[in-house]
Length: 354
Ligand SMILES: Cc1ncc(COP(=O)(O)O)c(C=O)c1O
Image 1 (cartoon, rainbow, N blue to C red):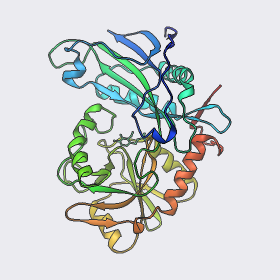
Image 2 (image 1 turned 45 degrees about the horizontal axis):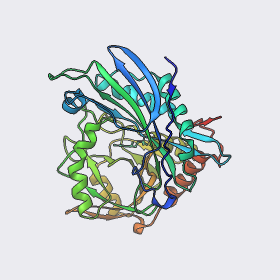
Image 3 (image 1 turned 30 degrees about the vertical axis):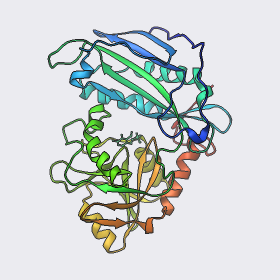
Image 4 (image 1 turned 90 degrees about the vertical axis):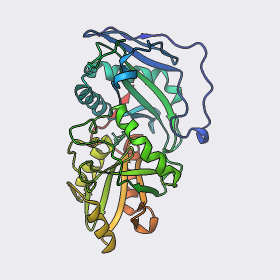
């Protein structure tokens, strides 16, 4: 790979007060870009955050070849930069690219680009509790043509956004709408990838849910509307009796980095965890017989998000009196401590930059 050209801005932006951060509202001073043209990655560079110029015929606008990642960098307890699971994200974008007939982003380039960009923008990494620098690597088709086929040209770019809590509720339990009509993805489709198209498919249901004062949507399977899939931008876990159950990765849901962390941690804690099909009916029955103890979502943005209510016009399930559960709290603390470095990282999830 060519060395990354670094062009720093001479007009740095003002930093944002921590209480104003929210999620994804501000961008840092720089971005990474690299072009792909007929099999060759060209001109990797870090330059001032700014606009792209693209032809209206660019394939991303017509045929939707757009794929992204979401990961975080933290200011560690010792002042060093901590990247959380960069290799996981480097791998996942390659898997997604294959499904979308896009070129594999070389892992070495992905990791170098992340590291160098975060170093250039390191003054933007927030230090307040539960805040981080969110990184958005994105791959899009840029060749200008009409006709349905994969693009021969691409742009891979990374932008960074300093973020606070994902939900307005912060770590308080959220209300989730059980969506029984619209679907997000079907097995065999794009659901297992972070294709932009999945998020377009989700907007109608999540907009309607928000109007009714729900934070997110619980998706059910496309074929029968019976089995639980995931929640908005999170995987979902149910503590039923002394077991923790999460839907298995059957091709329509995203295999989350945080989901994987939670599975490993729970196993280490000796808690029985199962990945399998879980029906809404089973959750309703567990709620009725008192064995449904906790429900939480997992995702890079929110880390662990307690769920207090699952409801729609037909059902109304309140979980744990709408209070944060004990296991939910413990997992949130454990992952946050590993991310910030206040707890030893025996899993090798954190890449510390020198
Ligand atoms: C649809 C969807 N499911 C699950 C997740 C959780 O994945 P991760 O833990 O890798 O952020 C995300 C967020 O990336 C998502 O967008």
